[in-house]
Length: 159
Ligand SMILES: [Fe+2]
Ligand SMILES: [Fe+2]
Image 1 (cartoon, rainbow, N blue to C red):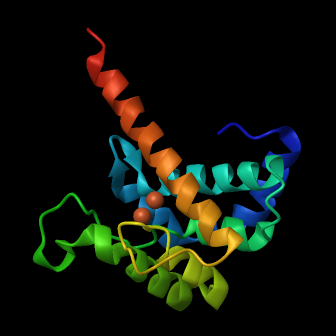
Image 2: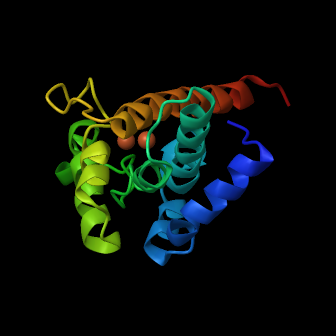
């Protein structure tokens, strides 16, 4: 989602801590959907969250929202590679991301709970329980679909 100038300035200030972190940067090495890296996916989700919160007057705390969205897929492996320990990636990665966010970047409990619930309804018992959590859950799905269509569009082109 394209941000307005003032939205982009607020996003840059809130996301800077994460964008400049080497472990967060390492998400550039992992593919998320199509040819989008996990890092770029997290940036897109965080920007979409900020825009939805602002434009629909949803009232979530912007700092918590951008922080949790930037780390919502902070699981730090390539889920496309076959490995028994992440065979159930869809079900387990939200918990892994929340643990990493807490341990590596000292993210708060509310933000970690929002990360843990971003895969609802796949993780049926992890229901989003805050505005932040609901916005991330929605923005994540919008961005995932957009990234998959973007790749499919490229593959459909001739030449
Ligand atoms: Fe995810
Ligand atoms: Fe995601």
